[in-house]
Length: 269
Image (tube, rainbow, N blue to C red; front, side):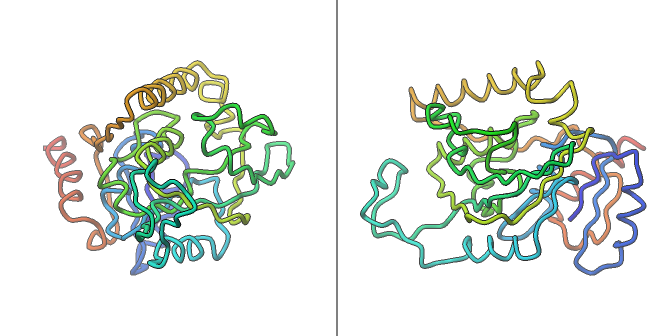
């Protein structure tokens, strides 16, 4: 499934080339709604047991998703008594459903430099900043967006918060809810930073006022969790989102597809 978030380039023409493929779904949104909401559209329309995401600047390696799927579908994983599983709300010697599978990746910077990102400890940077002193270039953290997520985590915790730190916020929600996160310690994705990437643009880069404000809200949630051990889900709200077109609609969740298309029909009428 490709979600075209109201692009103004040749994306629509490229998607049209695959419209007849029996396993391809091309969704074009009526207007740009942002990365978080575009991913939420994919969550509600997809019908698989697991969901992964790749931005336009992500290049997954050939066996990435297969490797992740073999972990998330492994029914022999259990809670070993050498760890204190009660802290995650689980009992030892019980079966574990892995909630998310991440991988290491390589980062291609705008100047052409290639950097290997292998710092798994970055997953808990908002909980333990004191463990992050070996960080390298900006972006030296495990890529959350391209994780493979079991469908149950969205059912229980909701979708992505409508902000530019949506991956970070969702990752934290998984951790606080006691979901099991598995990291494959191999480079299985290439992320290409370009001048028009959100992390490179002045309004949304790592030091932008917008990102700093979102980061502050994310940290506030973590601080409340440390104090209360309570975590609230983030229900998916697509009230302002409309689908302009969709190829292979039979592969989509029919209820959500009708809701998102109906709004478009009502507005046109």
